[in-house]
Length: 321
Image (cartoon, rainbow, N blue to C red; front, top):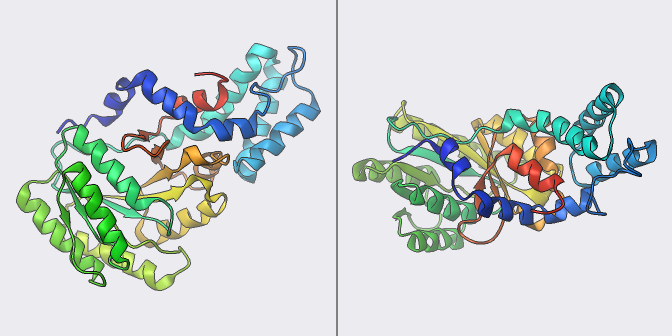
């Protein structure tokens, strides 16, 4: 399996992926720049009113108070130090936004010679788009030569098992499942045994959707995490939290609580195409520092994209693709 994912994803799909991301950010871009351009009057440095308007729109797009303050303060400093006209204004805004997003631009890299299977443990609240994201992830890695298996660890809902099995059939990958109500940790342990016996590269394990405030379910998630480690202490685990991009500032609470429970190593921002509040990525970057691994920019099976902060900002700030 070729695991140089960062280099590969930057080269593959170029304009096609850029166009999908641009479409996916359409609503957020319209929220930030309703007139389809950066707010400049007469080609000069923006006045106080325009800066105030920008600050309001950043907050409305769920950029968050802390991240908005950081953007506006840094922008004011650059405009004071360097000045700004119609051309340099967008460059300044791009620069200060990039400073916030660059630290979380860390694509998931699966070591070529690491212990197998590599485990991606999926977590998230109900309705975040977790199971659909699993199907897209399976397609993503299979398309890159990975041998993938799915584990139906969401045993709370029979429909969740059926949905995952459907994704398995669609991707032609095996799915390890038990009956509804079975112990989630036991299902995932069985999947680990099967994956190792079959020489599987990546095991993507579903878990029951839960509210981050439900202590008993968070304990169950901790148990799943422990079982994987007991299976093999050297096994590598990506704890991937799926967040609905339209969730707003509640996404911060989700990230913090799940991180406390199992140590979140990456985020998957789903449903980015369906919200005007995609600015939550700035809040997540500023407040948690957890890498954003993937973004969902559409409903098709291949509409899952590796997060790249430069591509994200280009789609957010440019008026045309």
